Length: 562
Image (cartoon, rainbow, N blue to C red; front, side, top):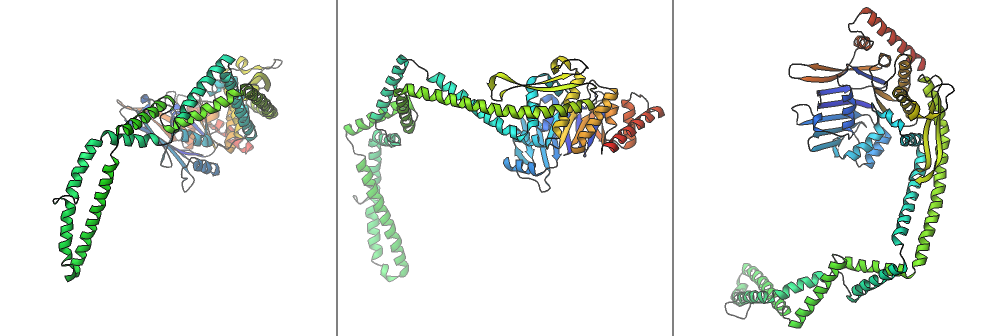
């Protein structure tokens, strides 16, 4: 359930915090007061598109924060997203909005927009002002039916999608691998040449790095030898001025008196260690200089080998390992081309088998859809009758199309007749805007009984309706609110009268400032707002009496239905 909404510096909202409750939360307000800011704020928090113009004038950033109650499903989703749950299982989603930077957080942890959207799918379902227009597109009809079918269909749908992709991959492979004898001969010749070139090089992983190091030493050998010789002259034993000779003399002098005092023996040990370290250094230095000795033939051999390795890397890969891997691929290609006809037949056989499996899976998927379509048709017809479609006929047609897609071979379409004696026709040919709005409400009502989403938001679900039909829509919203939290923006008094909690969205202006705010109405204030919705410019006794009558009628429905 959506506990609260906190908005700061967004459009006309300076700072607003509103707490919602269970059941039916109704929001009303004057035209232009900013009723759609509620949907816009929630949508932004959950990853909607943000533009600079949405910032309040003079503000550098905005904040939208939603607080929800959670449950076991939400805890599992948080764990899947590697996010920590709160101690009380509440979920706080916030988004800091500024030009060039947006920061999402869930329970204080920075997250991505994708993570927020995944989490939001379990928490809230938003029906925007124009969503019912999507019913004019047949693609939406399959989405609705599949959502009703639930988990069993989702499992089979994944199988169909995977097999469809496998078929497409095999078809692509057959297309790419197809070649005539001349093309095959050219491929074989090129592959043999490249493989022979790589195999003759007898490559060893890491060889190029070792050779490059050795080559660098060879190129700089003269400079290295001169400097090492000078170092040896200063540290060795070959001259009277060398550190080795001087250290030997110092050690002999110290040893002559070391036996006279224990502290002198310690000093002798330290100097002996220094002498040994210097002797080790001089031996290593002499060995390094000896290793630097090479003739022209050695240099030419290293240079030639390096040139070969670099040429192969330039042609076949950036590293020796990549060149070796390329050679292995060439070998596989040769093996394939040597038995090309059998290879192509194997691909064709795999494609035939996969198509058969795909067809079977499509059949199972279609069976699930057809079975659920019959049940959903009956439930939707009942819901439509309740929404004042007096003589409605409704059908979900599931036909097999000529083509197979990743969603199977079904073609799903909603058909309706709203007048006695008329044949069933596609929604796009029959339904008006108001009828589409009621049909979408019926769909949401039925689907709400099948899913676990706690919160439903309807933005002006009452488009194009009035009178008795408005009461029917009001009653249907109340029915949905028995099991779900419902937030509904409306301009109809029949719907507002059914509210468990009634909020008003108001706009106030001064000479240099305009602010939109949302607040919860007390009973008397709610009656006054109902009177305004009924068309009363002034709060007369007659207008209030009409408002009270509507409230009583709504209360009677609540009593009967609960």
